[in-house]
Structure formats: structure tokens, C-alpha cells
Image (cartoon, rainbow, N blue to C red; front, side):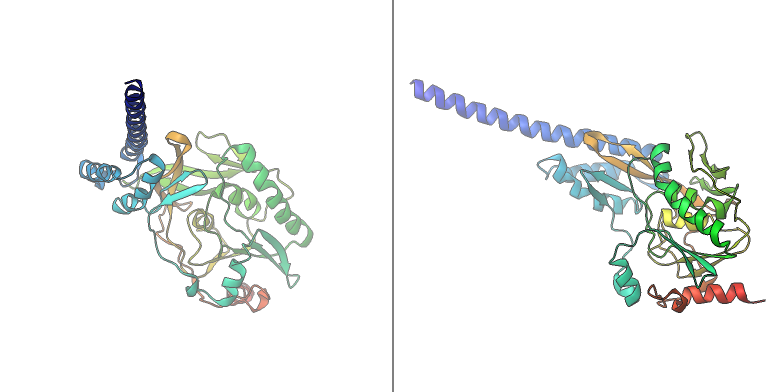
Length: 343
């Protein structure tokens, strides 16, 4: 009899624990997605064009097939695709969950581009032919957006550019964004401060095409409305009247495109290369339960004059003429030098 009671107790405890775990999993999924939907319905750029009642009901039905919260994140891709959230991303435990987005393969690029891409190119600043300054600005992605951290990232990059400015005084600068897939444009623009000068450099507008913010550089500070400004320590005179060629390509995306936009309407500037990816919308970070973070699209990126560009379209189109081993044989660089050296 005692054995029967013990076995019954163990069985009951096992069933009860299993039910509790199932309930806890269901609660965690519910908590997470209730918060996600709440944020999207309040702040997502295209929120007014979505039938939220239908989308929310059908999406939550899909969650019933998942045994825990982490596995339910597999539902993010089809969900984001359904609401056209092609620039939104959820970060969780060093993993990213996003929509399908545009398909760009390495087959679209030259062998030189692919070879350079495989090296995971870092920042470069150097002289070419002892006459022209060349800057390769790669993607800069990180989670710590504090002004102090941005300063730590931007200052050494700015210092290298400022050293070239002071030492060689180049009249022509080439800004290469072919590998810049985005991340955070703030340290990029601060590093390029001497070329951009004290100006409004880009902005954000809402779904009604109303300008909601203008981002400025002023005396080495990055001024974004009410946010505490990040900054660099300036050195020497500005080079904001120097000639600049901006090179873009299909992998130039998101904050890489914002960096290009900052040079739109700048005097003595030309755009060369291929059309950019087309992720010219503004994201902001929002914390979600369980340590997840949502990068949510809240507006359209604009140039300094408040104009929206769905893509960066070069003034001179050059395709698959890359040469990173010898920049003076690179079709984009040659076109830039030809343009600036023509009387």
C-alpha cells in the first residue's frame, strides 16, 4: 500500500511539475510577444497600414506549437515579413532574428571585392599616389550607445584622418563605403567631422513625411535633439571645402547609407559606384523581456535638406571594376580622380 501511495505521489509530482513548466513556457511566450506587439503598435513606422487584430491573432496561434520562448523566436522571420519590417531586428543571446530582407549574393560582385570582403575589412586611412586621401569606412555595430563608448570608438579613427589632413593637406578625399553594411552611424560621422564641418548632416521624418529631428555636427559634437552628445576632440582646421568622392555599392546599407546621406548636398562632392542596398530608415533600440532588444524602425532617413532617398544613387555608375590591391587601377577611384582633375 505504501509503495502504491509513493508511486502515485511521484507520478502526481511529475505531472504537476510538467504542467507548471508548460504554464511557465506559455507565460514567457505571452509576456514577450505582448510587449513586442505593444511596442510595434505604438512606434513602428508602418503601424497605421497594418491590420493588427488579424496579424496578432494569427501570429499568436503559431506560438502554440512551440514548447518554450527561445524556440518561438523562429516565428520572428515570417512575422516581420508579414508586416514588411525588413529593417527591424531582435537581438537575443548574441543571435539576431530578422525578416527575409533583400537577397544580395556575393556572385554579384567582382573577385577583388569578394577577396577583400573575406578579410573582414577594417578601417583604413592612407594616401594614394602621395596626392589623394583614401578612407575605407566599414560597418560599426555595437550595443553600448553611450556617448562615452561612441567617443572611444570615434576618436582614434578621427585622429588618423586628422593626421592625414595635417600632414599631407590633400585636396581630394575618397570615402569608400562599399563594405559598410551599417550598425551605428554616430562614430562614423564623428570620425568624418573635418570633412563634414559644422552643419546639419542628416535627419529623420515620420510616416507623414514630417521632419521629426535634425542631426548636427558642431565643434566636434554630435547633436541629436535631446540626447547627450557624443564628441571627438578636434585637431586643426576643417577640411569641409575639400573635394570628396563617395563610393557606394549594393552592400552599403542602413547606417552606411546614412553616412553617405550626410554628404548629400555637400559642395564639391560626387557619388560614384553602384546603387546602395536601400535600408534608409531609422531604427532605435527598445528593451524587451528576458534581455532581448528590438531594433525598431521609426522613421525615414533624410539628407541635410530634409529629402528622403530610398537608395543612394551614384552620379557616376561604375560596376565590378574594383581593385583593392592597386587603388589606382580601381575603376571607382580612377573615375573620381578623372572628375576632380578635369579643368
